[in-house]
Length: 460
Ligand SMILES: Nc1ncnc2c1ncn2[C@@H]1O[C@H](COP(=O)(O)OP(=O)(O)OP(=O)(O)O)[C@@H](O)[C@H]1O
Image (cartoon, rainbow, N blue to C red; front, side, top):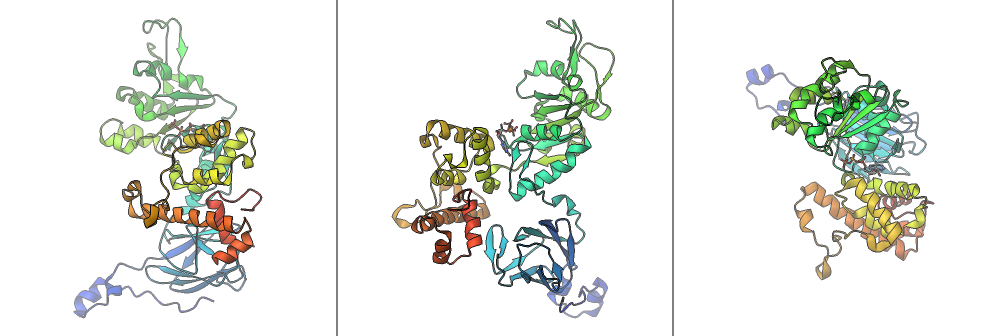
């Protein structure tokens, strides 16, 4: 049962001003933030539980205040103490543990936005009035040829699952090599237009003078060299999808014409007098920040707003290193090679590289290592443990990172070094390693998987 529920203590301004008494800080502060717990994944995904002041038990036992029908969590797994500004989560000695950002905790202060994992269930604390249904996590680890099991990628898959069938135009944002083209192709394949053509126009790869004719087509004699009528990409994509790669490169004078295509589905070939109606979906992609381009006057605001109605952002690989083992296996699979092709040491190195060229760079390196041997591995930035006799050193690159990110990198490095030495010492015996390190087996496995140190069959 929920205990100790207390009524709200928010006082009106009128009371404070007229009484003249000293007002306790908690009364003078903002109105109490009401929170709810959103179930992002697991058997109960999509449910939410409002939290009022007081104490809640969470577990699979029917007597818990918040019952989660997840076999991987304990009957009484966690206790939540809801305070005015935060929630204290206390693990009730659960069998499989409670985790936040990959780390096991016994007691943790949660705030709006925190995500915790119990078994296969992920729970997010959000303000009561939030409309965060879009954050529910897809259970899939791939969408078309896009692969990823991280929370960030599963959020992307949730969006793509919703966007694909609708047929509305979509804007894909992301750094180079994050899979924007794969994403566009997958949207096409999962839509009702899949039987129609998928036409790619790379606006960064076409001479600006040819873009107009490439997109809108031309009539015979419209310009020197126009020897016959030619349909542009929008017409050629009839019944299908046009992928406009690097849409930020579209010259300013052509932008109103793209807006007309998007709003009215009409194109006029270069040199023609009349408009033709086209039937296609536009998926556009950009690696530049279009909002900035709008501020700098390089991109029309109206076109940006029209394009950005449905937007998806692909996260860079450095923000989801837990996807690296899965991506490595996907590349090996496409080459017809088993996961065992790469040694645990190579995998560990791949898992710690920052991948500025994202998945494309990872794919290239894996292919090179398979074909040329491990000498093809890129030069890795020094590990935090490579600091010589004085112990760990922080690299210059890390010192320039935001504090949180720099700290995370250092911890990642420590975890990896620790695990490698532990596993070597225990000759891959997980039970022994878990006893020696004094950490739970399930958590140890999770850490090994995170660092690419666990074989597919579960052993280290
Ligand atoms: N999530 C992913 N899963 C599997 N492979 C991926 C993924 N993302 C990227 N790749 C690989 O990286 C390559 C590059 O991806 P893609 O061309 O889609 O990136 P992009 O974001 O369009 O890059 P650019 O901005 O440079 O055009 C793909 O051919 C594919 O091999």
